[in-house]
Image (cartoon, rainbow, N blue to C red; front, side, top):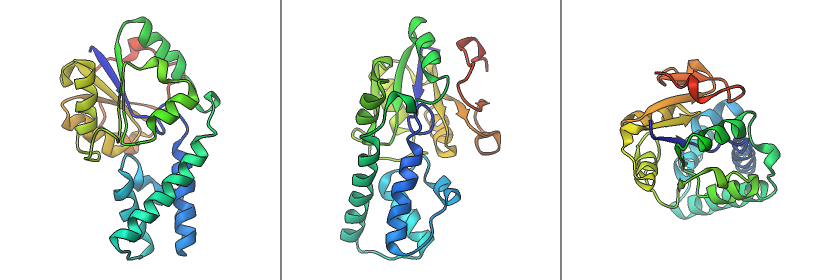
Length: 212
């Protein structure tokens, strides 16, 4: 193991809730209910693919131009939420683990489909912990395609087989495996059972527990 690659939303920071609130606001405007259970289908999925799923749930048909406008509207609302984020929204145990990783000299990268990654890292103060950031501005294929994780490995100058990915979404775990990497799931074993290891969160988690 030479590098760790982390998804962002729901793994390191509590920003996933803002995606839900923004998508829900759009669904409310379109006249249908969008639940937190529905939102699970959007985890790790690109913005336009998320919109397609949302419209499918609501039974709404839109032109391509209307889809672009709706996606922009959602993103503008989401950015208004995350622009107010603070370090308090870093998830429990995350900073302690990242400090240990950096002290051990292990390379780190973000691998996130979000084009808002730099803003979130800046607002939460997490940017200093990462050697590279692979995000939605650099890749075009959504997870479970491995593109974002392969980009992360490339930016770090390591082989994919030397990386471990931390993910909270089933599609993300699949993307890690498609990249030839091992995965640690953050959340429920029911959802993330294909990962080599599943932990509920980073509280008390240390490098010596990374044993596959």
